[in-house]
Length: 250
Image (cartoon, rainbow, N blue to C red; front, side, top):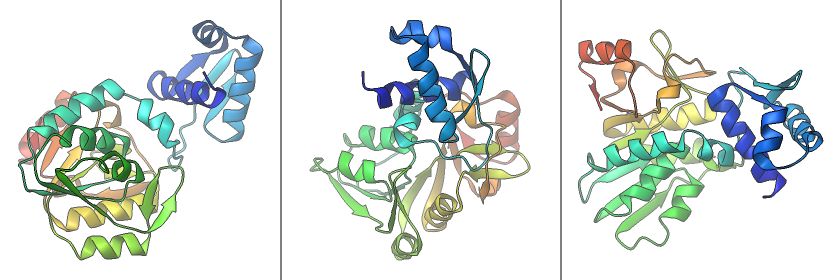
C-alpha cells in the first residue's frame, strides 16, 4: 500500500471514529509506530487532524474540506445503500443534476444501469465514471477545477446550470442542523448546490447518517426547500420533523 493510500484510510477512520491510536494503526497496517507518527504529523501539517499523546483526534474545523479520496472511503457502505434507494426513484429519460460529492459518485455509478438518462454534473469523477455509458448523456457544467474535491465551480459553472432545467437535482451536504438547515464546507460548493436546487423540479438530499446534527461553514438551503431526504438511517427526531414538514424521507 502506498503511503498516500494509507493516510487516506487513516483519515476515513478518523472521520467515523473521531480518534485513532498509533499502536492500533501500526498493527492494522503492519508497519512501525514511527511510520504512523510520521503519517499523523504530515496530516496535522495539512490541517486534517490534531495529534494527541498516543494518537490523533479529528479537527472540528467547519471550513475544512477533506480530500476526495478520503471522502470516497468514508461511510462507503452507507453511501451504497443510499445509491440503491435513489436508483428506484429515477425514471428513464429524466434529466438529473448531481453534485460533486462522493455520495453522488456512488449514485452515478448505480444509475449507469438506467436507460436514456441525462446527467448534468460539476463532478470530474462522475464525468469519468459515465464516459463509457452509452445509455447516458453527460453534460459538464464547466468552471474552475477545485482539486481537493475534484469539482468544477465558479461563475462559469453556475451560468451553465442556470440555462438548464432538470427533473431532479440530487445533492449531498457536510451537515444538517434544525436551525441552520443544509450546510456545506465551502461557499463555492454551497453556491453550486443552491443553483442546482433552483433549476430542478424536485430536490433530493442524499445524506448519510453521520451528517445529521452537524454544523458546517456555509449555509446552502433551508430544510423546507428539500422535497425528499434519502439516508441509510434517519434519527427519530429528524423523521418526526420531516413528517411534520411533509418532506418525504427514505
